[in-house]
Length: 324
Image 1 (cartoon, rainbow, N blue to C red):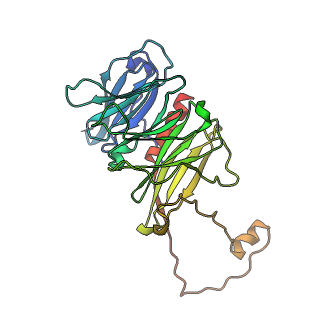
Image 2 (cartoon, one colour):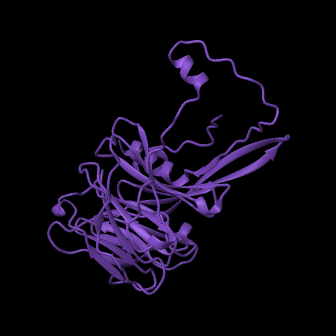
Image 3 (tube, rainbow, N blue to C red):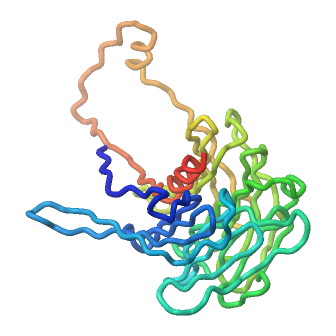
């Protein structure tokens, strides 16, 4: 694998402020939204030009919103909206919709009030999943918001995760069939909490929040959590996995499974793969001579593979490392 350095973004490029979150455009690999530590929002775009039969990359940065505070190291999150050409920006107490292509002023979608009640995370995959609602979390709730109906959420569940004291609560949305399941996790807690919610109207939920069983040997807590989808040859065998990173940087996958008969039940992880080595490999491991193997012209070798769409999962891990 070869890595090419296409562009570098420094704090000096964003008015001397550090970047605290990024969201890739799911419709184009050449665009990304960036929010800095004072709430300024920037649109990064990449263009490719062929010069002398060589491909040249150039990057452009456009300011979408001025900083909203002079306090540095503030909490801000950014994501693409459910409609193309929109962005959603989150602070600790306010969720704002931005129009990237028109002249509409910023619009407050939701504002929090009350001691200890604050936003903690924002799902970045709503546009990619073609969902009608954005999913977000507070210290007390999981909330679904409609950009076309500002002022109040379309659905809200009280999660009781950490008793309202967990400020680093993250949400990763798992889309299985017609179900959109919000998986809550924290870098300070040892619990995965699942909350069923809507992707399309009507905004209803058929399950109370429940805890997920954690595989044995998984080091907890995880520093960050993302979602990946495998795409094997057999479409019916598609698997959704959680991808977590430990504070030390190790990556772990947690497969989830849901059958047609169990669509209304909690997603279940696949059993751990049990491996039986061939006699030849086992003999090498034990430093013994392998047995003589007879040729069989009728044997046909075959391979199986899975494609992993790690774009959003790696983005989540990159943002964690950036903040660290």
